[in-house]
Length: 482
Image 1 (cartoon, rainbow, N blue to C red):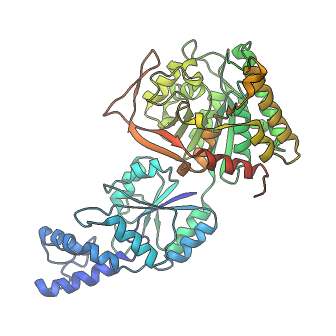
Image 2: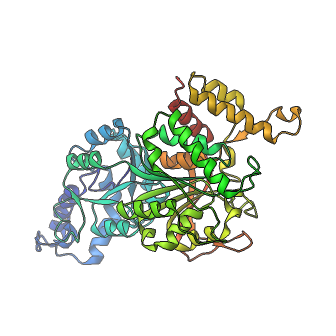
């Protein structure tokens, strides 16, 4: 799980230090002490003007930060969470004018106190929603009520870390009083609920992607596998959509058998057999997407084909928009001027529907992002060397697929094949393997081009990925021993 932690009053005992320093300074100012014991924070408890408070913070905060103590049990439970396999992201609004060197001060303090973590992120504003979304945070812990409300409004699960001053008006916020409770809350959280929407027989990378997903069930709670439409692909160019759907369904069941996961066969649902531009039909996949989305607090849809089923579900039941995240492999980067990519061009109306809906969306472009996930038969034969039916099958379909694209034997020299669909699974496993940015949602024009915008709802576009990290994780899960 990817856990976001504010620093002050979550990792540090910020209030204790501030109370001490306010008392000291108050003696120099008025020597009145606390005049408002019911104040909702320390600065409201003393008889100071707002200008005096701000000047005090601006002049002293950076030095105070060097002397903070860790919050009780913070290090112990942070280490425990890391040992349990979670990732810890320190996300804090430490910025000018309170700090002139926020990263240096914070990193030095963390090192001094031997605080272990995954990544340090200093946000430019008190609203940390952007940073949480860009880093695919599953849950955030913060000590400021307004911050928690902002996160919740952005669809991010959040808990208020309790202090002596922030629990008077909770407005429905969930509270953890200390690090022991925080740890217990994380342990009780369910796995990430996902739906895989796949055109399984279109190409071979879907079969690798399903394998990768099943091998990662320590992270995922797989709710359904829905079959997306495809037709006239390079690998299966004689297929009608109806034939492709049936072949995809059969291939999915076959992979599940080889993975010894036959219990998941009942979770496979056939989807659209016409594109949205041709027909807005009802189907088992669409109805299952709606049912699961309405049942769960949040569901992630990993869409690695034409996005028709997702678009139909959104159109039929728009109430699910706030309850789903969509990670879609489709289109190309803005460096590639057109989106003549297979998943995109099949059903532009479906792409427009999803982009215009305002759903929480991560786009993994094919060119020039997922295209980095190329591999060779020699690499697969080395790392999938364990003698299993599944490994033999994956290697065999890789060879057959490559040969189907080759015109002459010499075309094999130095050649490789891209397993595009691994990217969507890998993104949900570890977003740190990707470089992403949150942008204003582009308009999708009828000709398949993107029109960049400035003031629409935000979506995340992936710009690059760490190919080696993804393949290393995949091969280890497939049984390769380091």
